[in-house]
Length: 113
Image 1: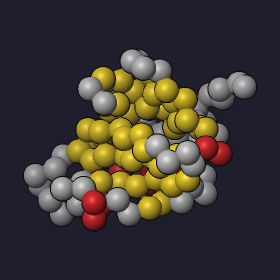
Image 2: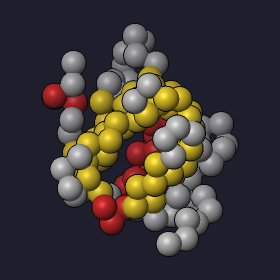
Image 3: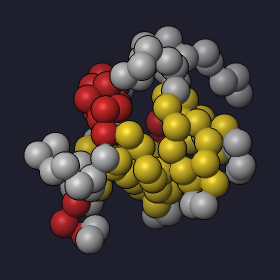
Image 4: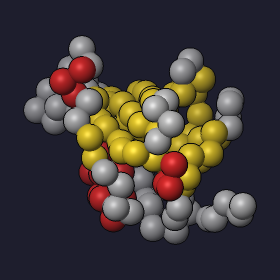
């Protein structure tokens, strides 16, 4: 299948992606029109139709301690893919994007410490 160009997502700094980590590998996550695409190692393509829900961890906006948050993607096959160390400034634009795509937002916060 074709991977489409980023259109509707803009990061806090005006880019079509933002820096984060997948496992121990730093790279860029591109929220696309029908999928997420992580670029560097390992390149990871996640189609929205394969996603059961997404969750945000370590988001507390009133905390000065956490400058980053995590995006956890629960796949329909039961696997969870976690993108870590996302700059907290990206939260609003990412949350609005996820809501506009009709993805279900789950609460993983209770399970993360």
